[in-house]
Amino acid sequence: MDPRSQVSTAVKRRKHKQGKAMKHSLKVPDAQRTPRCAQEDEALVYMNFMKSHRCYDAMPVSCKLVIFDTTLQVKKAFHALVANGLRAAPLWDSELQKFVGMLTITDFINILHCYYKSPLVQMFELENHKIQTWRDVHLQYSRHLLISISPAASLFEAIYSLLRYKIHRLPVIDPQSGSVLHILTHKRILKFLHIFGQRVRKPAFLQKPIWELGIGTFRNIATVLQTASLYDALSIFVDRRVSALPVVDERGKVVALYSRFDVINLAAQKTYSNLDISMREAVARRTCFVEGVIKCYPDETLDVIIERIVSAEVHRLVLVDRADVVRGIVSLSDLLQAMVLSPAGIEALFS
Image 1 (spheres, rainbow, N blue to C red):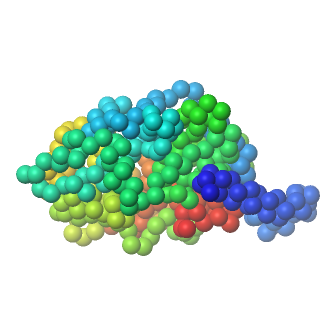
Image 2: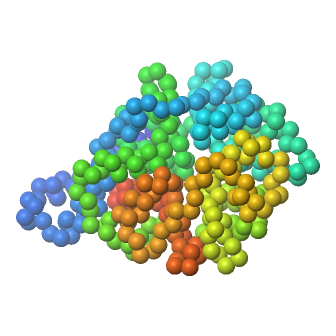
Image 3: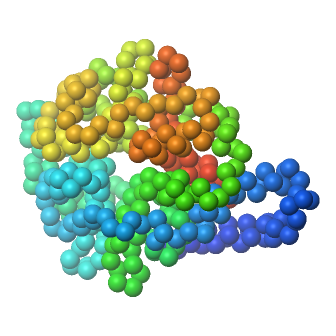
């Protein structure tokens, strides 16, 4: 079955169940509403907001979009991503005359991790492989279907797709022309909510501490020692499927943040031939835009967390104690799961 039809079916079922549950409560006059009923309504505010807005609503008036043909060399493709300040691009198969997938930073990490031997051994696969060659090799071990969405679909469905399939880029494709209109991301959706969500009443749970709400990852946190090698960091990216790693000292204190986007810039600097360098050196070598370590504390409210992550335009906050020791990660996925999907009874992030 087409993954998009699975998403649509799942969402329709949820809508049907939610609609039946809400019919009676909508008929209750405000003066007669019980505190419990009001709390239930508050929990549904952001879910209903996302259901009432289309993907088209969150698309910018104009944006940069690069499309790669699968016959393009991998090395040239990654250089093009860096040159255009992009993290991913849709892939077009000329023979099939359709979009077949996405080339992302994850592919670059997997290639480096797969073919790197030592600074003395050149990675011919990276230098000579075409995108299609890499896909033929990589798709033997993983199922890569192009997950996309229609511009008329709700943002609720878009969030479900992003979290259910654990992807960071969701192509918005015109069902009539087959053209890619935009690449929707967690960041774009949360920013849309932050701007236009001001029109809806703020629920009381926004004033609760993040630890009380249980939003984020607090156990088995993926970190990397600053004395570890860059290849060690790539191994964690591959094995744990995380988008960034807090770089810590021997006491567990966070000293930097190394993200997947930092890895793609190895292509621009042409420094991917030596992955044996320490993380301390890898962090010091960065010359591009650095996201930095944007931190938060367990006693800070959800409202403060959202404001900080949107204003800083980052993908996650590092949860630390007062000694700056890493205690957790609060990501965009965590926020969207808790605010939008969990009220609908969908635990896509944990499936």
